[in-house]
Image 1: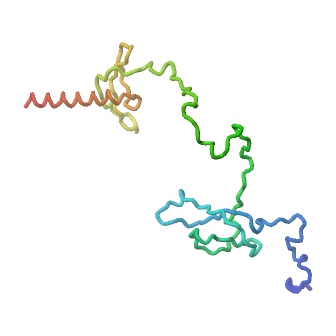
Image 2: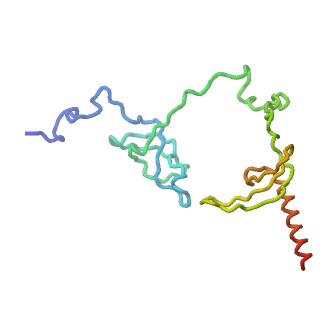
Image 3: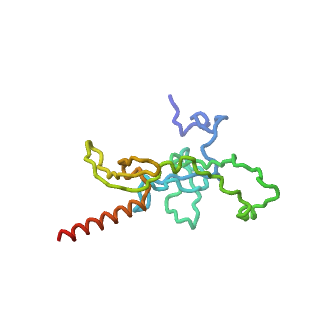
Length: 199
């Protein structure tokens, strides 16, 4: 006949995990953890909301898979402090941060106080072919007929500096905002002049 679990004298017979010499609890009292909160503030998207809060300290172990957290008084958290372990994640202390001083004798207070004149000059040099294709003038524009599902894109008939033949180029390939503005102004003036002459 089997003896009920409550009437057994030795709790290790039940399979108490603390009797195992290799047993280590998930969290120790006093250790820091992150807490996952499913709900987010109204108006925030769940996908973009910050849902791991904390760190909180473990106050005590309530059950095998439940822990009570120490809640700070002034943090504004309003939830029941006993939490299931599936909503907890340990805080990992990263000890891989460099500890060597970069400059001898430089204190923490002096670290960001520097003279700009002591900084090295800018080492960036423009590439040799940066000005190989420079727009000299915009001669005409058009809206080609789309042959597929892509959107129509305006093209400009461009005269390149140093080249004889102008080419049709999509506006997205060009970075000549000033020339494009001047071209549009002259086109508007041309159209208004033609309309005034015909009237």
